[in-house]
Image 1: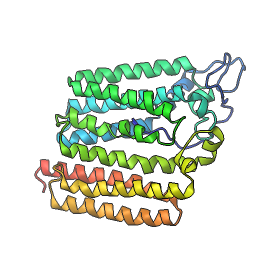
Image 2: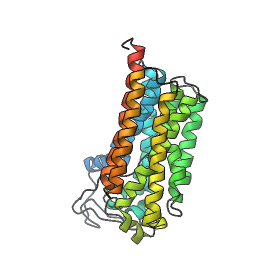
Image 3: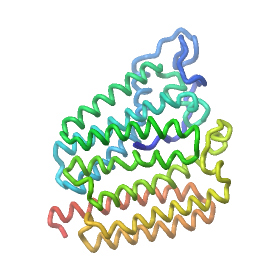
Image 4: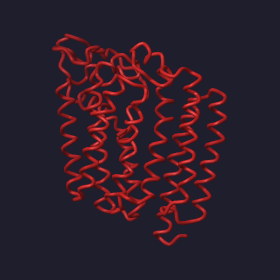
Length: 328
């Protein structure tokens, strides 16, 4: 999942060792290698929070709750279980991802401060954290008593950690696989609320989330292109060259906009005002991002793309809530 999504703001941490083999050596501590000091419990707790990438996991859980509320606009215990299960699953996948990529994380300034390459957690501690989160997430989904959710649980783990993460070392096209588990949290919420997995509206929602992730993550990877090149990892801007990359980025962005413009045609939109609002939002983003990409201001374009998905989520949810409570 990106379920996600693995990027976090870069920051500096003094005296945090970078273990380029991805493992904490015997005697390593937060303050340096072989200093004889033990890792304090409170430091371990902070490292664990960083390992879970709480803001990312929280937003993944929010997207699951969004899918749930589109079907069942009244919060209940199933919504709480869905939110908790998705949050725990995203956290578990994040921890396992960092276990798998601890060696390459040590090569990037943005990720070298993460708990494993920085030596703030041992490999065994990280694996125990991942196992605990996977078990708790499974318990939440079992409590929801729906076989489809258990299948989604397995599919997300297999695609994100079993396929996408290894593929990132091999091909610039890995995101085409990774975007699938990243687009599944709203599906999880939809099914947990009793929605049909065969509903065409759910398919449209999945497509929008899938299409959004490609320009989102390509633009994020673009910022670290030099470090990707030094690490020998393939990313689109390096694989295709600047000109072809720019064209492909525009193709994916326009496909995302088409997906947004299609949403008012599906059954989860009930009011004319919200249909018009979603359409205007999509057109505004098309114009703004198109101009920013043309001007080479790709970082600002990324902010607009992210904001557009959030705005559409709010509009769709407002449409559903207002209709449910007789406000429109």
